Image (cartoon, rainbow, N blue to C red):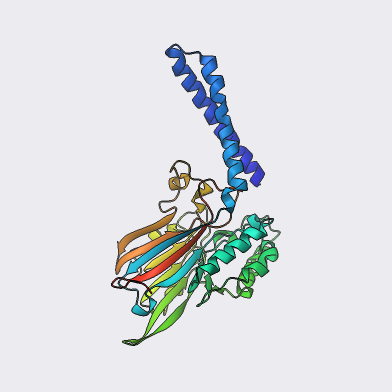
Length: 336
């Protein structure tokens, strides 16, 4: 499927380049230049696409980047000032089939950030739960002081296979869930967990980690989550929501809840950024990086992680695999 997709994209880009060259050569001919010379010399541009794809396949998808982000809020309690969340997303373990050493490198770099918490925002697999089997030992090496929290992404429901029955698909989905739990991850299926720190003034501070199954404002992606159910009883001074699809932020979070920070993935930023141009912006209003807006209880933040793996297109051009280190800072604090 990936091969067919790459050929299709390459063909469409090549056709577009040929049309562009014909237009340029035609304009040049109007000013006295040779149409044939301009056109034939311009055909070298057809090499750009395969060269970029080759680079993205051999180099781009293996060059992991670590981005550091501060989230400053009056609602971050004093004992969580400087709290470090490592946010990862979209592993798509199928894409690490023959790149186990790269995944091991990623785990090492995550642990080197000494996270208080690791947040995984979905899409552990691409097609089938069997993708997890070669990588269990490596993923068991992830370490965080307060644990690893995860949610389901659209691919984790295995909708893109031709299953014999609904029961077979449901079994596959449960296998994905079981794998995450067997890894020791805390899978938040429309639920939350409270992390408590002692405070010499108030006695204790609470951070609520809320997680929902996939929720999307786009009809082509299935919605399984229930945010109200997940937030029931969550009394944290500051709330962090794990929700795979960033369209959920405007549809159900911003201005509708007191969630201070939502972490998402899903877009991969289309695995392509060329000269600052991001095709994913054509589809997603919030496609990559940090966003903020005033909500009902102050500033609300969204961070969209570019993911670690790939789907459809087995390359990354200008969009490296991302590990995000998020530090929570009290509005009047300076971090730990």
